[in-house]
Length: 192
Ligand SMILES: NC(=O)c1ccc[n+]([C@@H]2O[C@H](COP(=O)([O-])OP(=O)(O)OC[C@H]3O[C@@H](n4cnc5c(N)ncnc54)[C@H](OP(=O)(O)O)[C@@H]3O)[C@@H](O)[C@H]2O)c1
Image 1 (cartoon, rainbow, N blue to C red):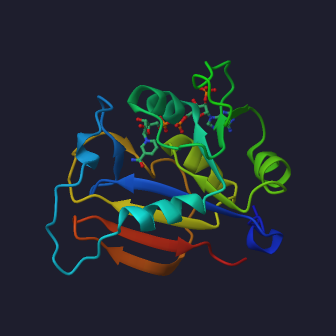
Image 2 (cartoon, rainbow, N blue to C red; image 1 turned 120 degrees about the vertical axis):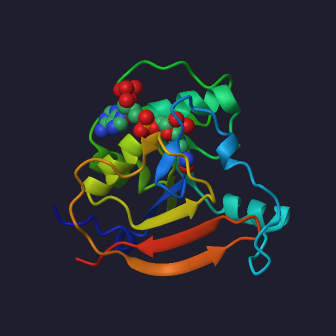
């Protein structure tokens, strides 16, 4: 499968996930306290002000998520603000309250990116879960991976990368270590 020429078309798909040190993105009981920041533990790290975080989030044009991530977000509290959200599902799902920013999509994922999203959005963030991210990766629809590593071993849970991805060498673009012990790794996709 040849990689979709994301940047050439002006849009970019960034896969962003938070993983434990041992490669899990969710615990079996779905509890999320492991994602909490333990406070200032790494002196050489950077910290981000609330204003910097808000500016960064404002630059995201659209979030894409799988239905299980959507259902979990509804339970936990909506983290996507008023930014447009596209939920991929084959089911009829309940709307997110009165939010008009949520759309549901069922069908081919390349069509989703190239036909539905690319004409409207440039900075598209794919934020989970594992199943949807793996399908995007397999189809060559991801331009950038941003993996945030939390300083915790979970032992078991839902693996970010489990299935049958092919060997591919990505290009390291940035490493950011934060005072709270989290590390963010950014990679761009291999060029064809
Ligand atoms: N640590 C993190 O950064 C992070 C981020 C996001 C999520 N999570 C966690 O990950 C868990 C959810 O991940 P998950 O892998 O179980 O599920 P998921 O990827 O969020 O959702 C899977 C669902 O997406 C739909 N889907 C996927 N591919 C599709 C396709 N090609 N066409 C149509 N529908 C498609 C299907 O929905 P239907 O079954 O409705 O058809 C499928 O059951 C939750 O616990 C969540 O909290 C963690």
